[in-house]
Length: 482
Ligand code: SAH
Ligand code: SF4
Ligand code: F3S
Image (cartoon, rainbow, N blue to C red; front, top):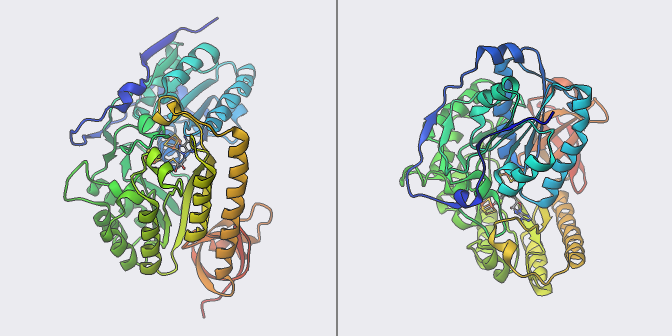
């Protein structure tokens, strides 16, 4: 029998595009659980798959926090679960295709376990057309919720289980900051900490400002509390997260800025402090100074370039020029010793010419990036770039993409050579997938290192001498402390 749909609210891209000037509201949510849901959830199994960026990783940790408080226990195999959640990403079409493929193949779960619940959440379902498609063509999906209402999961699940309806609640409001959600951390030594949500930059190709809403900063005290707690619990590394960390605080208090926050977090004494993403547009002098001053702020900056052509940058709405970006890179390299630079690049933006593309290659060679994430432009419904004319064929875009990847890899390989014969601090994360006497960890510059050592070192920062370099990793040997 076909289940009825209960719609609390559907997403609207138009609503999501609105931005008010009001200061951010901070809301402390008291999460409550009905006794019947607590009874139902006890020892039932859940599986969650997370797509997309670190924002989704943290959202999944909040979802798992709620599920574990309810009594659900995690399983490794989706087909063994009673509750299966896909936390989705909408940034490119291939991310969405993967999710639709997965929902299709997970239909099997309902044959194995007819009572199983399938839920979709995350950025993809913040889009009107996707929710319509799910309603129409994917009856196996029982629950749809968005990025703004994770704290409502217990109420929504209660309805799915006890009203036996398909439940949809996706909000497109400008949003607040929700504090007080439990977090089931996925790592014992490294943690992400949200410092802000949403994005107001509206780069013309990007869906994120619509799926994540208005830029909202968390209060300094709430962030520091969370960081201090992590330090007290033995965490070695914190990464402060936001789509644009250098815009932090502007929506809360004009006297606040990211440099101030970064300094306060550095003073908690966390061994390694990172942040991502910093937009080239508002990277301040004060930020340079703080990064250079504190040894526990890692010399590793992710600075998305997107394109090396001024014309393409202008049409992307990035609000910086190639000249400005180069200046930033020069300053970073001169002020921060041994800094590693990483970036994001899009090829095949509408009407990108061969000359534009060559400018991008030139910039990759100029900046000597340690690594770069490279993407073929993917039109996103509702964004300005999706309406632009495009005279570049997909074949040409793919050819450019391959050319770009080659140059990026050459640069990365070249940069990796500087490690050889030097000794670096490495935070040991675990053993290699293939051999458990080989440890793996990361340098301060986020380079992966493999070396021989005992498992007792996991979670510690040790000294490793680098012997060999490859494009994506290094091979080293443990140096004793004496
Ligand atoms: N806030 C971050 C980016 C988040 S999205 C920033 O501004 O850097 C991560 C990356 O995905 C972007 O940097 C961009 O390179 C890529 N991206 C975003 N939208 C895209 C699209 N429509 N097609 C291809 N790549 C895209
Ligand atoms: Fe997207 Fe631009 Fe915002 Fe980054 S800054 S999330 S690319 S709109
Ligand atoms: Fe994807 Fe949403 Fe992150 S679209 S990249 S999961 S903010």
